[in-house]
Image (cartoon, rainbow, N blue to C red; front, side, top):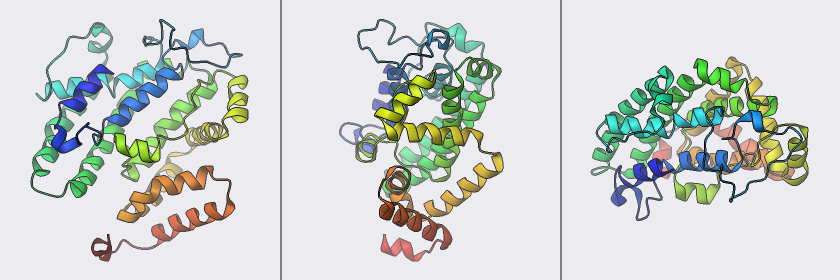
Length: 309
């Protein structure tokens, strides 16, 4: 969390990211870190009780420790620790000495991720900061976000396909493993939309989604979500479905959403539209949301939109 805070405060300044850095894209990564921490996913799966419903305890001395046996922790290191080290390699932030450096220095996937982030910080991100001085930040943001998602996808593939990740993933209970792998596939869809809900102000306005706030070790956890947080249960089932989705189906879904996101209006409204289509209990609102998405996907993007929006 400290590395992320330093990145936010030292990669562009308040003139770029707002008085409180609220427009920095890295907030979403810290939100993910906090979700995984509070849901107990950073603990060793061998200690998970399949009959328990996990409860977050702020006073638990282990709450800030990420187990070396946690698949979630291993994957997150590619998006927090490797991100910082990549920025350091690019000369953006100072180098740091990691306490458990042996965990990272011998992991080819981690070293690959550092190189990917180094290229991002020294290339697209540096170009964004320079060009924002002379052009529209809004239009430049869209270009930066496309590079962020490309980088994110490359990091995800490098991490999830490593032998270490595969071994750790197999240690997860079946349901939580499906959540994790389904979330990896979800990244492909978010990338196709050039999803913009990464900044703190966007997260405040739209939310980060109804991600399961407890780890799912067994049926009791699933039933708890079904009874007490139906939206989180819906997310759980959707992530399970995404985990099972074929590569062809995933590409077709990404292509469809990409057509919608070509419209500035569509891209701006997609988070709320998809939220309505997924979680609303109102059939009229659902029908309107689906119709809106299909219409934008069916119509070719028009240059006239530039003069309208």
